[in-house]
Length: 236
Length: 236
Image 1 (cartoon, rainbow over the protein chains, first blue to last red):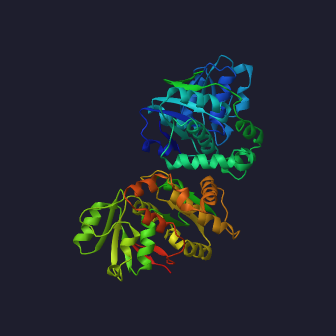
Image 2 (cartoon, one colour):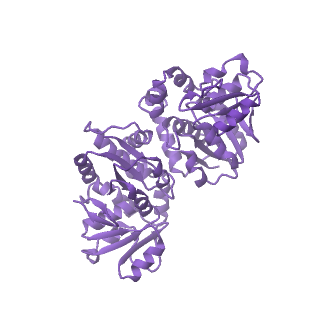
Image 3 (spheres, helix red, strand yellow):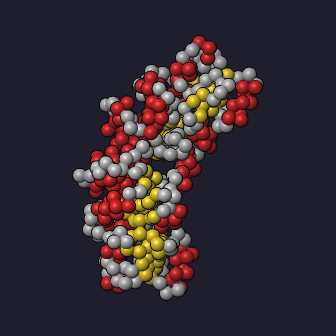
């Protein structure tokens, strides 16, 4: 099976993806928040791309998470901080969510065979699933407004490395090679490696170092969010 | 001054580039071939995006280089192998050139303040020019059909690192950080680092290891191709 890494939703149409499992990555913070939400008992999530839809879902009585540029949009209950989902209020609920980058990537990936959500919080669960499925894999980094970002790339590298350790997966894709090399450089201290990264600076300005540290911890939430029609549900 | 790295022509419109010097990179092999051509006395080059234009220039009596997927198009004299330009026949001539990736990147970059051509063969000349100009710099990797590639990224990292060593340039761009980290990993043996890269494999299949080795040597051609209207000319 083949592994590829796509560095931004803009580049996604360049990849052949009909028979591929797409892993959507938005480490800071949408995919980490979604993983945390399911670990804390959210029943379903509805990823939506636009704020217009977010307002509509709110009108229809849903709990709605809406973030742009790192901040919760006025009038909404939740953003993409994982800590917002560590709350009994979300247990058993359906939550609609729109974010700057992550939900745009989910929207882009809907043509794929299967779409799952990956974060450092569920890294081993993602790898276990992909090892079972035995299909080609495309790691789709959400990036920042279609530009490359480091933290999503590091996760893609971590997961690609783990899959290739089993010898059943390989790559002939330069972005996968780059992601693996960067992960191997960074793995002993992801937080420090990202010190100069654009997104860590952006969030640090919003005093969100606690979020960043949490989003870089491994395997705290062994759940697998998977796309099922318009819903994200808990795969296992 | 700020440094950014853009991994593919497709992403170029995401960058603000009006007051920026764009360095177009296509290590294997267009930017290496263009640098070599000027070092060997070519008077001007005309980078063109389409094969249609290439046929027209041929009809008009120009020497025309035309490459797609690593191969010279039937009926044209030259492709993008640098060795094709180490020839007295090109001395003093104007050569039109179209390639799979590099000339597409030049076409995309035409909105920039200045456009120059970078390769390992003229690395120090490029750095000297950028240090003199004291403007923001965008390294534009040609990639492969709009996908990320390693060799262009390594050159961007090498040049960015050299500029930042002077403390007058800085970056807050994740792709620049990644390019510099990858270059520092690779710099002791670029050829081996690229062993598994997609383009090195593609060219090796065409028995072009000699081209690859040449394109990875430093500072063999201290010239600066610079865009001047529709022409590339020798800057210094």
